[in-house]
Length: 303
Image 1 (cartoon, helix red, strand yellow):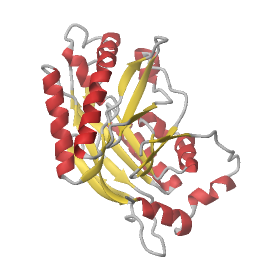
Image 2 (tube, one colour; image 1 turned 180 degrees about the horizontal axis):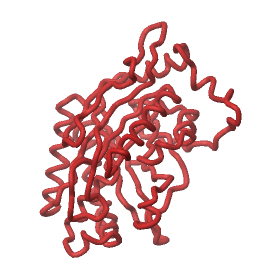
Image 3 (cartoon, rainbow, N blue to C red; image 1 turned 90 degrees about the horizontal axis):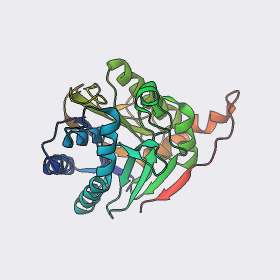
Image 4 (tube, rainbow, N blue to C red; image 1 turned 180 degrees about the vertical axis):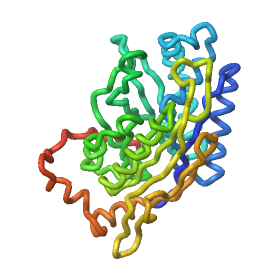
């Protein structure tokens, strides 16, 4: 299925009354995306932090909110798996802090296939807030997800600002980069947006950014959220046909508004541009002074 519709969420952080409220919210969001024709749904970084509101005793505490959300992840993932199966779609769930057996915490996004199968990607490079105040640890490796939609990779928020991470995924065959984000200023939003567009340019691929939006004054982690969802490609056109808009922007949401942003993408255009585009950045990457081979990426099948 080289041609399909993607839906990128501008997802508001809500204070939830109970688990049923979360289940109803997520189900409604998925149903809306499916009604819009989406085969791939992308939720943002730390969108799962709204689950911290289910424990009023700790929701205002950084460490306590981690434990509440991490403990709910099996239940959250089961819900996403059911929705992916019921609607026959791929869903990148909102990332969440996940406490590991050794006591560390990692920021993890999980990708669900229509079969209900799941694979995950940890954020690799932590921001100052994550390192210095929230004590989130970086993951160890980058995955490439082989799916019925094509070859996908996830670069979470700050990770999108580091070219070599996306480049490693591209060298492994990634056609689409998923960029869930959570930023509390427009400066942060633009860093991730510009990073996403630059990675799409360099990798001659698509980049799909999904941010959190709105305010959640009760949460010390995601109290202010700024951004707009966007679907980006390389600003180029293949002589044989296929290509992208001149500015590389296929779709862009209204900043700060809770909504889905839809775009139709075609991974065959990625292959065409890499083979015979106006420029050949993927092929010419190694000609840069200092360019070096990158470590291998683990390929995970979700077919």
